[in-house]
Image (cartoon, rainbow, N blue to C red; front, top):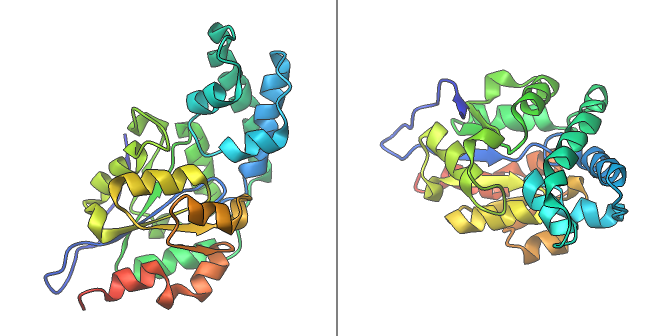
Length: 239
């Protein structure tokens, strides 16, 4: 279930507004750890999938990623074991996880401006707990989701819908920040403006083609341009 803390209240009669953040590849430098972990898991079951192909699909839920990359006529009985192998290999990388530059300051800026902040992640619960510790910004985070909060993973919008519900924010009053094509597609399905970041390894052109309203290099770049960004405009809208 999505976890929520004390959500900021709207003032001046305006609707509550919020920002949703993807975590892997957006706030934490983990996309390539996921890539090499999937690569290793596939190899264990006899599939030699190029890392570049895997990386593009990182950000989808595990079942969708496996189904997108492996032959349709495979023995699907192995799928759960492949996903478990990826999880174990990724867990071995936990000690190496680091937040991108500017993450703590960006989350604090959103929180201090009165925006509700959610981590809209489809990670496993245990991975999410580790990443929350890595972020070390609990005071700026009002809610967080994991894979258990969505029936369908990105590009389906279920995770974003769960995060919005946890915050008590309507799609029209939110902005989503993510690093993958699937993030942009999920946001579009709800009508939520999506801000892209290239720190996860996907180019600005690809993110824009997928629906990003603007793209930054990463959290620090978004923070430098905060006032003119979609988040800044959300704050000033109707004021």
